[in-house]
Length: 197
Ligand SMILES: Cc1cc2nc3c(=O)[nH]c(=O)nc-3n(C[C@H](O)[C@H](O)[C@H](O)COP(=O)(O)O)c2cc1C
Image 1 (cartoon, rainbow, N blue to C red):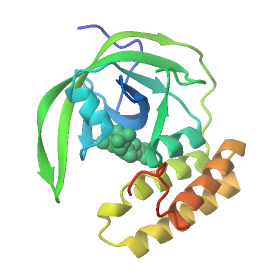
Image 2: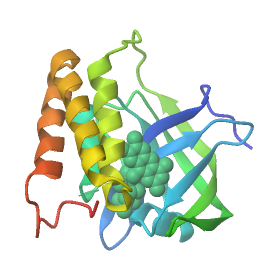
Image 3: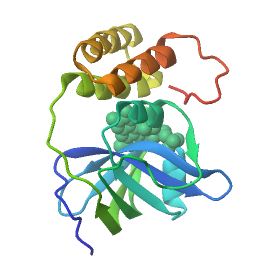
Image 4: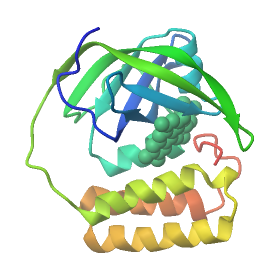
């Protein structure tokens, strides 16, 4: 088994691109779980899961851009090539099913994620920014709104995280904040680009 060129510890959120020849490359978010073997869990019947199960080409990208995170999680995002601009590193992967189950009405499937090839593109000084983190947390809650046990409470949590993003975030975090607001709080009935959440 090929070794990853860097440590993956805990759960690392990456942008995954998977190829469906008729639609192009689908862009979504995926949590990679560290361990002797890197694994991931897909929730629901998503495009990523379908492409994994059909053994289609897939890449993961290590990125920091908040707008991209929001688009990948909450919008149907397709593109012509697998590459994500601004990635700090990428890897071509192979996803092997370890089986699945069902939790509170949602199907899940676990995958071993093996690296085929990969490259570290750039290195940077680590920046800790609450605004960026707040966008990621707000996006996680938004992406689960459809199965929320308490929608009002979750909407309030999103609102308070967006306040932190506005106070502490950089320009992209603030743009992402506006995008989350639009996708979550405005009436997007009939917007085909918005994922159902
Ligand atoms: C930070 C973050 C992490 C996510 N991690 C996963 C994950 O590990 N597995 C998953 O199925 N969906 C995850 N999602 C939701 C997906 O991004 C996406 O909404 C869903 O998989 C449907 O995408 P697709 O149909 O384009 O594949 C995550 C969302 C966020 C905001």
